[in-house]
Length: 203
View 1: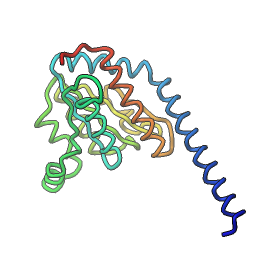
View 2: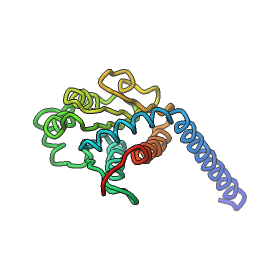
View 3: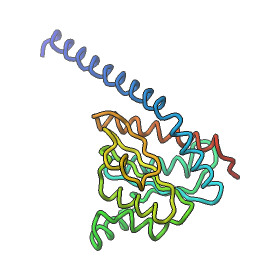
C-alpha cells in the first residue's frame, strides 16, 4: 500500500473512531439527563431497602451478564466507600449449567431468586433487547418474593419496559448494542452513586 493510500486509510479510521466516540458521549449524556429523576426515585428505594437489611441480586445474558457482575461488584466492593450486600446470579457457572440442564434455561435466575431472595431485597436485570425470557421469568419471581425489581434495556425497552413485574425500567434508546451497554454502565454507576447519596450506611 502506498504512503498516500495508507494515510487516507488512517485518516478514515481516525474519523470513524472520533464519530463513534462522539456518538457514545452524546448518548450517555442524553441518557443521564432523561433518567435523572428515575434514577433518584429508584435510588431512594434501594437505599431504604439496603438500610433495612435488603440485598441486591443482578443478572443478565452474554455481555449483559458481565455488566450485571460489574454492577454487583460496584455495590459490594466499591473503589471508595461502603460495600453493600450484592451478588451476580450470572457469575456461578455451576449453578447456571445445573439449572439450565435439569430444569431449563428460562428458569436459571428465577430458581436462584426463589432459593435466595426474600421480601425487602432488590433484583436488577440487564439486557440490550429487553426481551430475554429468563430475565423476565426472574423478575416475575422476584416480584412474587416481594423484591423491588429494576430492568435495564435498549432499543425501545422490549418486554422489560412493558411488564408489570418491573418496578422501574431504564431504557437506552439506541439501536447499537455497544452504545447501549456503554450507556447502561454509566447509568448503573449513577444509580450506585445516588444510592449512597440517599442512604446512610454503617461501615
